[in-house]
Image (cartoon, rainbow, N blue to C red; front, side, top):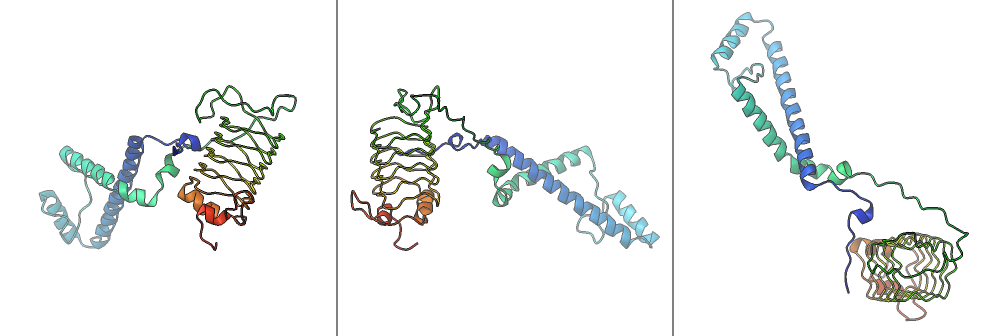
Length: 288
């Protein structure tokens, strides 16, 4: 069976180019390094002034050593930081940039780059339901033959009565099923990628061999349904989703989705059609 992996644009995340992210963090590291050097320099100058404020002889000796270039960083007294000649200024700048680049891995350890540079996802808002359309609930298969939900208009089945309907083999990618009722409907080998189905009532439905990836099943009622050999990668099952008596035998689901679904309080029982125990068919441990 083909295994589908979601892209960032499917999840509503716009990630920056790797080079742009690396250069940005490099400049942040450079700024941190330059600020640290400036703070150390100012602190050294303050301590020097306090140490020699009452001694003219020491002050003159230090100034003489500074002019002769004999006072180094290892000397007991540090002179005021200076950029020096143009060649020294270029060397200092190059050193600062190099240190900033070396600080990039350290910054990645403490800062999430996706959280800093990813563009915020736009608010998701559906159009109003057109209750005047008599054919709105007559769901038809897509002729495009791909799972990207590309259509000239929404496939809107919200709040429709789809009980007992047979959608086997249909391409219903991106269908809107919020609040719809489809008890005992057949979705065998149906393409349901990116469907939006919060509050969807589909009790004792047949999803065997169906592609049900990236579907929002938040607060849906799927009790008694069969998902044998179905693809459920990146689909959302909230704690309010009823999955009691569901058969999950041989489903394809990601590790994160599996852990979350195993914590669902309704994940229990035995499917009335196949006799498969719900929790064991998903591969969860006996106790939550």
